[in-house]
Amino acid sequence: MTQSTAPGPEDRKIITLARSARARNGVPEGAAVRDETGRTYVAGTVALASLNLSALQTAVAMAVASGAKSLEAAAVVSDADTASEADLAAVRDLGGAQTPVLLAAPDGTLRATITAG
Image (cartoon, rainbow, N blue to C red; front, top):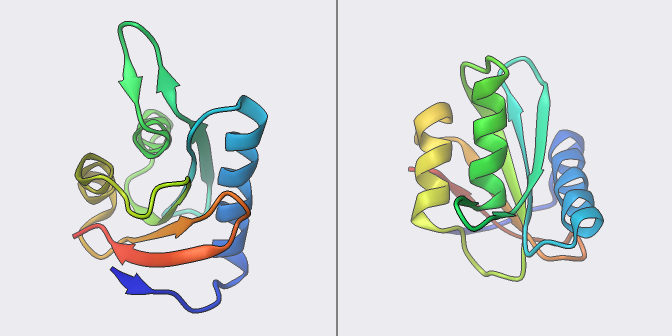
């Protein structure tokens, strides 16, 4: 994990979208991913009796279902200090090992940027 510098405008956008999904749905995490064409996919945690997905896994699944071929970046807004291995694996599967994952606090403050690999 690397400490972050100030995110650029496109990274701030996906952090804001992830934060909004978390707040709007009242879920533990919000996430957003940006694909190779610049499209974004936003999701919250899914917690059903038969299906449990983190917000980031859900956002990656939405990107895949919409035809994305790769990811440029991902963002997670959560109380957690790190991304789970399952989240990083989902990003790595679509985006590759070098895809940055932005970890942000609930207030949108960027805590760290890590790579999926």
